[in-house]
Length: 335
Image (cartoon, rainbow, N blue to C red; front, top):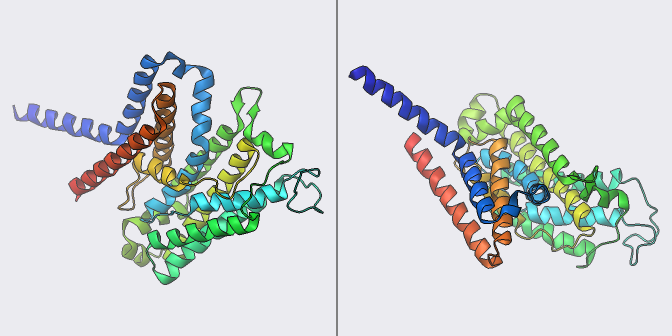
């Protein structure tokens, strides 16, 4: 009898562990099944690629946000950083005959240089946020909130509040498809998923991020350079915001200084839904990918079902709150 009880306890513990680890995947599968029953067109190859493409921009940002939240931080500036990096990118990537060209005497250059400029702007802005947090010990919420306003202001000043358009084809092609069916934004997204997973799981940088988020004092004692790690984490998050700007410009064909408003909240939501704990020290790249996919599936499915866009926002907000409550309860149980 005692042996049977032990077996039942073991099976119960195993089932609970599986549910905690893969519960978010089960939720995604149930969502896909439910929406596809209500709207069969949801599972068409065109719509599947459309969902992945929609998730690419905020999904890329969520990858960087995962590092930040694992380190027990937050970055509210990534949407504004995307806009700033985007207008810089667009100003350097206009065609020679563009009307109202930002740099009238600038000849068309290889697209590599504008892209590099966008990545540099993103990394610098993110790195500065990390520097503020590391050196002044200002809470990440306040530091990134300030940087959000600064970056948006710079984007408006740089562009004079106007959209920058007529971009070179080599850039807009990045928003197109490979072989006529495979979206290039999705390819870029998947490449960054692999790179981010390797950084987080296989490098000292990733291990340091977990250590800082888990216990900053213990991390210092064990030899982790906390300040350097924080700067690097926020710089990487900013770099990915710059990359998201490249994908955004490629898809839209222009960049407005007011672009990406609220994207930071979507990136945070995707990361949170994916199981990254705001208590620090817990999170995965895989989880961020699934979280971003859940948001994209939800938005796409509700649109196909004819649900009003305002109610979509309400639904998304409820899901975020529920995800945070589940995270808090899970951590309280561990404690």
